[in-house]
Image 1 (cartoon, helix red, strand yellow):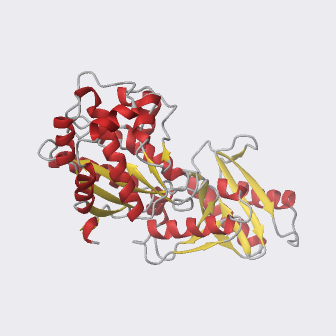
Image 2 (cartoon, one colour):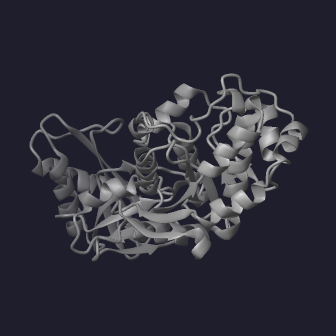
Image 3 (cartoon, helix red, strand yellow):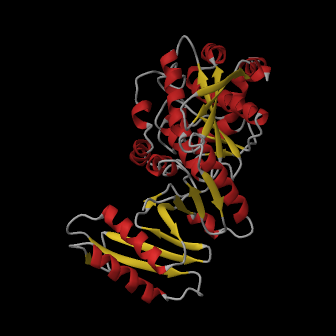
Length: 403
């Protein structure tokens, strides 16, 4: 008997009170988005679980998509049968036979949510377990650490059986906690910061600063590829590519060398904040880790943050590089991030950047340049594309200033 649905367990969503319905609705929406190229599936959500009805689709092709959706604690392929002991035994036997190899052990774990069912859990364990033992040669019982754990759950609407459990990405459904702009460079840190922000339910739009001819088209493609990796966790990612050459060249020419890095970060933050406003975001996200490089001291962060009152989220703030690399490898962004194509964060890097910049000094240096006009021009000429996580396609190429 083939399974006909996938049971999804919520995890952290289950701890929510009055807002639980909102979170489960968002998770259902995200699952449908991730599986939109599987036309015959349907998704039903209840208070404590969600069911994906497979229709004519191949469940195993769906598993890799579900593993990346935040808000899912775990999921299992499931067979649903009527409240009939013979049907339950046959379904249980079929599931165990699928996974059985000589030497494997099993147990039955029954749960009776419908107390009106004729057999209690112990009787159900015995009836199903003994039937399977009689019909599978060489199978043995191990109630502590079985190779195959057959779950049998009796509910009013039917009986659900499963023998496999797959881990989800946990966290909260993307979009349940609002939207933020991720300052996405081509390095290792910022994609990880985006991933961790999405894990807390925040929808992320990426902002990348492109400075041709100092940065190449390959550097731009690198960021598009990173956005594709991130979109696998959220269904889609909107990417804003900001033309930054004029601003970066002006800073290089007009601001004292040891303050150019501070001023560059301030202009990036101002631009990202304007894009956030236009797209109704609530926060900015960076990949900064305290003390990792010269621009990531508390004094630098204070001088850079001075240009905005918008919350700046730094998910990596207390992580060391090895921890960040581990996550980058897990989410498959590491090998793209280390490709040797320079981004605008690495060009024009001064030999001795100020590690404890003064806000009043950098403000004074910037006062001799009309950065407002340059920033407006950069925002107006920003290229925007939407990257689809299920297909990897790029759509909706526009200029923000013309929307």
